[in-house]
Amino acid sequence: MADPGIHGHDGVDHRQDSGNRRLYNPYQDLQIPYRTLYDIPTSPEFLFQEESLAQRRSWGENLTYYTGIGYLSGSVAGASLGLRRALRSAEPGDTLKIRINRILNSCGQDGRRIGNRLGVIGLMYAGLESGMVAARDTDDWVNSVLAGLGTGALFKAANGPRSAAIAGAIGGLMVGAAVAGKQVLKRYVPI
Image (tube, rainbow, N blue to C red; front, side):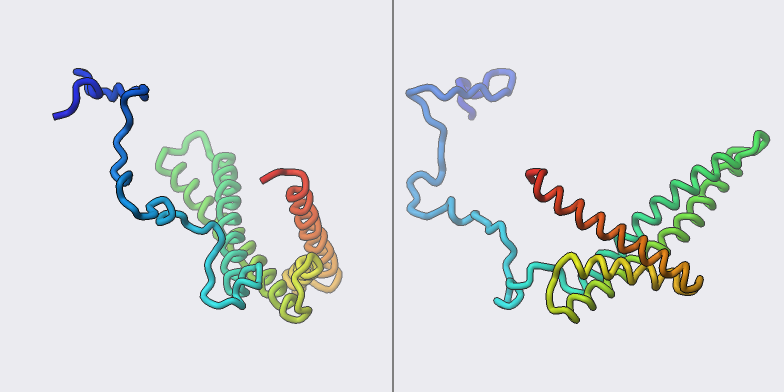
């Protein structure tokens, strides 16, 4: 039975740390280092020492990450654009079923279209960036900017050389701005 001094009649815990009472510690008399048993390291653990020297994702992880992020963000953006388009094209005499059908069709169509585009862009960027790291044997901002430049040029290469050059410049500038923004955040925002 519970001590009525600790648990009152209402079932709420009324413990107070007074000088003559102490809380029960089941590990007090044991001679084991129970506190160190649960100290989990905060850094990742590696099977081989060579893996710990590389402070970046592997090319496969990079490929999966950028492709997945591109597809997911493109699908969400496309679905929101499709929703806007469906709501604008609603006619006054439409029933609820027709409106819902129009919304689902527009969201699915635009979400797939933009998601696939951004997924392919992420796939090309990850491949080019990993290729640049392997070719130059260094991992710095130049690899990212050149990968962005190449991705833009490759993505619009079918539209002609002028379109490819413009898209390459836009891709390089976007990645350069992202890298510069990341450096500014690292420097001025304490995380």
